[in-house]
Structure formats: C-alpha cells, structure tokens
Length: 613
Image (cartoon, rainbow, N blue to C red; front, side):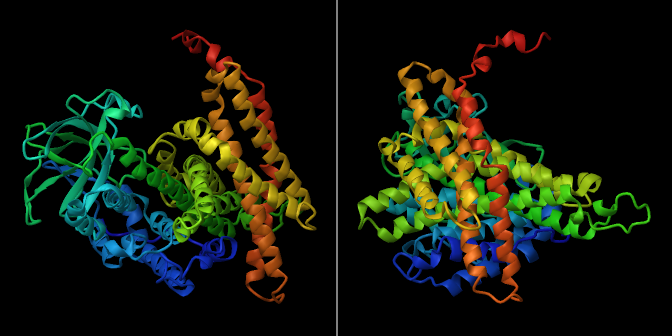
C-alpha cells in the first residue's frame, strides 16, 4: 500500500498565540537552562515540525490504520513507510528537543516540546507512540540510571538506534500494579533473571530500531508484597555485549499482537520474559525496591503526553470538520426555509453546525491552553533552579495539580470533540472517505491507557488536593481569584468573569466538603463523585484560561488596523471564551450540587439487581 494523502490540519497561528502571547514563553528564553533558545528558534522548530508532519507522517496515517502491524516469525512488522519515517524523525533531531544539553539534547523549554509533540502526534498518532515510549524510557534512565547505564543506553535511545517501552500491566493485575507477578532473581554477576508476562505493551515490538530497551517492573525474590516490593529493570530485547555491540536474543518474545479499535499502526503486544530461563536484566540505578518511584516519572510524563494526544486529534478533527462545513452545500438558509427555490448554502451557515464548530473550537483551544500552562510552570521551575524555593514549589505544585486534569479532561474531551466532528459531516463522516472516523477510533484509547480516567480522578481527590497541606489547591484557586478580581468589571467579559467566580466558589466548596466527608465517615462516597469533581476543576481551568486569552486578544486587536488579518483571529478567541463561559461554566455549580446531594444509589444497588439475566 502506498502512502496516502495528508489529512492533518493545524492552525499555527493558534499555537504561536498560546506560546508567546498568553503564556509568554519568551520570558524564559535565553536564561539557563534555555540559554540557546530564542523566539525565532522556537518558531523555526514549530514550522519544521508542522512540515514534517504534513509531508512525512500525515500521508502514512491512513496507511498505518488500513495496514496495521503484523507478526511474522515472532517479529512485529510495522506498516509501510514507518521505518523510513523513523529514520527521518531522528535525523531531524525532533526527539532530542528537551533532553539536557549535557546528555546530548537540545535543552528546549517543555512548553515548546509539548507544542512540537502536538504537531507530530496529530499527524500520525500510531507512529508517534514508538518514539514517545522510547523517549519516556530514556528519560527514566537519564533521571535514575547509573553513570554506566547512561553511557550504555541513553545516546542510542535518544537517536533512535534503539527503541524503548514501559512494561507494567499484567494479565491478572491490570491497573492493580501492586499485584505484579513478574519475578527477578539476582545472579552472581549482579544481573537479574527476569520471568513474567506483560500485556497491552505499546510499541512492545517493532522493526524500526536495532534493539528495544524494555523497562520492566518485577518483584525481586523475597521482596515485600504490594507496590513497595517492586523494582524496575532494564531488559533489552537483544543482549548487549561489553563493547556495546548486540549479542544473542534475551529471551523476550511476542505472545500475541492485539487487534484493536484504533491506533492500528501501533504494535500493542503481549510480551513473555524468560520463557526459556535466559532473560537477563539490570536494576535501574543501584537501589532495589524503587520501581514505583522510578516508573512514576515515566507515568506522569506519559499522562501529560496522553493529554497532548487528545488535543492533537481533537484539533485536527475540528479543523477537518471546519473545512468540510465550508465546502459542503446542503439546504437553504433558515431565513429562506419556506422558499423551495432558495439557493443551497454551505452547511457552516446552519445554526446547529455553527454551534458544533464553536463548541469544538473552544474546547480545543482550552485544552491547548491548559497543556501549555502546565509546560510553562515546568519551565519557570527550571529557570528558578532552586534559587527561590517558595516559587519553585509553587510551579511544581501546579504541575502536579494540572497533570490529572490534562490527562483525563484532555482524553475525555478529545473523544467528545471527535464525535462532534464526525456529526458535522453527517453520513459522510461515517465513511472512510474522510478522516473523522479514524480520529474517533484512535482517540478512544486515551481515556483508558496510562491509568484510566477514574484513576486520574482518584489521584486528584485522594492525593493532589491534599498535597503540601492543600497549598497547591489554594494557590490555584487564588490565581483564579486574582483574575476574577482584576476583570470582574471588564466591559466585554465582565458577565462571563462572574460566571467564572461562581464556578471557582463551587470547586472550592466541594473540595472543602470532601474534608467533611472524611470527618463524618463518608469517604466511601468519594470514588463515585471523583470523576465529576475532576471535570468541574478542569472546566474551571479551561474557562479561566479561555477568558484570559479572550481579554489578551481583545487588547491586541485594538492595536491593529481594520484590515489586519489578525483581527479575525483575535475575534475568534473572543467567541471561544464567550461560548465556554456561557455554555459550560454555569454547569460547574450544578455539578457541585449533585455532589453535595450525596447520592448513594450506585453504592446501594445490589449487584444482582443491575440485570436479571
């Protein structure tokens, strides 16, 4: 099958607004550790990434979906064109972007890296998973590995000579990582014999690189039960000789290749380690039983990456639907609905289509703002470099708080946007003639992997709200409050800012009520409302950031001539903010009321009463 046409769409002006006008990434450029970066360098890499996505990755997206991966003689074969694209991706240095310069990276800001990731993922999500898993594994080794491990693995993984994976999930454990049954037995030479089975391993096997470095959670013989007894091991697919060359197979085999709803170009594998007793691994770092702490670095980065995946597909789904709505003519204007001879108009003229488009636009821009805000916090913490511990703690705390929102809200909203985009096409969207149906299928996994969205919600209410004695949440709410105070009488957005204030109060009161549940012995209610609270908090965040963008855009538009092309762009930002504030923010207090009602029906309904069959 030959490569198809590129269907990926991106609005680079919108990306540049988020980076440079709203979150002011320029303020950290030229400062350590981002000394080598200026605004022009950032704009150049964004254009290069967009071009690579359109010319190389985009045309392979449909190919990967139709062809899928195949298992031949125990080796996974990726779709046509993927191997050449892998080579080009690493030759262009896209995956070196935010690794520190001291390990051979380019030392770019995280906010820029997230933007580049959006461009590459949006063009071809399945392909990007191979590089994303490799980068995540390399980051864990870079953070926790010994000097010898950095020398042995890092450069080859960063440059794509070797791939990488994350191997947590097991057949009978799922998200219950503490039930891990994979075993590690220490050998006399300091290595460990690894045995076990891991399932749903993204990029678990492929033909893109010379070797694959698996990061495997396993329990050392005699270690305690649960997560505290887990260690993390570097387990190559092919053994590595002392001189760095490749040796024999490391007894890692592909049991099955999953056939899935979407992301068909990504190999999702069941992997067997040590079936023949000849699988060897080495401990990440030098201390046993640190597996979960080490893996959480990769998991947290992966959760942010899933939010970016959601944004990327939601954005291109919206922009493709917008293109279709501008071109497709059907029906007459509502103003002429009684006139059988009235001319047909483009469906973008119909109110319901316009409603769907504006809803998608607002949500996509809000998701992007939340993600870039998270990256901006990471960058500011890096620039501070510990020189101001209080400010550094603030920025890091906001990253912790935003991570479950980015993952869960980003992935849930992505599927909603992709559904709405398909609806915009009508029956045409249900066919493979248009990309909407693939985007819809590909996006469904985002709410499931890297910790289901309920796990994200429980992480938020069970851990993140109480971190630092609740300081991170209080700082977040104070930031929203400062914005409300400064803009409550704004001539264009004052009424909408008051809606934001009501949503902020609802989130704050609900968070406080959870403390009351703890004191009253009602914590069993928490899991049944955690998802709703995360949604409330994410919608508060998106509403705040969209209003902030709208106010920035209105002020910028006033400085432009009536003919300037940016005036329409800024006007669009205004309507994104107004739509979300009027349509979504008012539901936040209503959701708070539902939580406050303490509905116990889901807890009290007998399992046998759910169906009589």
